[in-house]
Image 1: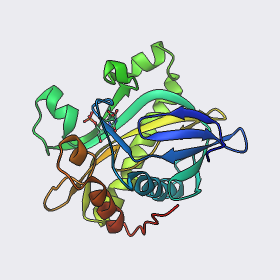
Image 2: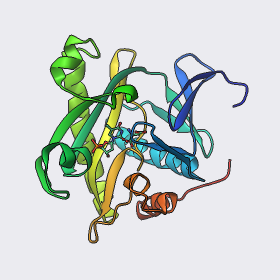
Image 3: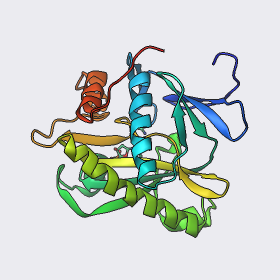
Amino acid sequence: MESAKQLYAGKAKSVYEAQDPDHVVIAFRDDTSAFDGAKVEQLERKGAVNNQFNAFIMDRLAGAGIPTHFERRLSARESLCKRLEMIPVECVVRNLAAGSLCRRLGIDEGRELEPPTFELFLKDDERGDPMINESHVETFGWATSEQMARMKELTYQVNEVLRGLFLDGGMLLVDYKLEFGLFRGEVTLGDEFTPDGCRLWDRDTREKMDKDRFRQGLGSVVETYEGVARRLGLELELDD
Ligand code: TMP
Ligand code: ASP
């Protein structure tokens, strides 16, 4: 990988050129960030755990007919993905109230949200990822209204697939954030699905099993992610 040209470095992943122009290699780093990059730490093994977790989830989503950028895992930390033209909008679905929803609206944490809510945020750390709506997306040209409708449809479809998957492992999918891009004009799921970008609680104890452990200084972050993987029946391979 050292010789490949780096195209982009985000807060937790780096993107490199692949052998053909339609693909990229995504490397999951151990960097863990919260609060729009204000808190950053290296957590040993996290990159490898998240890469394999993401591969497992993306395969499940593809199996359910959701177009994703994921092609295959290349090594413990790296995956080959389609090269998307990213849409700078974060799509969030919530099944239970937590995080910014509670802060913004004074809703008690853990309240069931029926129907699940759908929210949009602009991917812009400097502005603290402000909440936006569908008309902003169209007016400012981040996506067309048809693309926006498709993003919303796919984000809810992901909920149908993953709620049951996590419940089978004794976990509640509280909320999650998805990012999409275009591949040959088609709205395609990009970025990642890992415990860094969703909230998962133990079904019975409601213990937090996601990046809130890092945000709130609860400890055992990567160990807990490994526990989530184990509950899904995923065997992690940790060496490159
Ligand atoms: P929030 O409660 O902070 O708005 O986040 C809702 C969910 O989306 C939560 O699972 C974390 C995830 N998320 C990110 O991973 N990155 C982001 O930039 C945002 C806005 C949310
Ligand atoms: N927006 C993500 C979070 O709050 C990542 C970050 O802020 O650095 O967890």
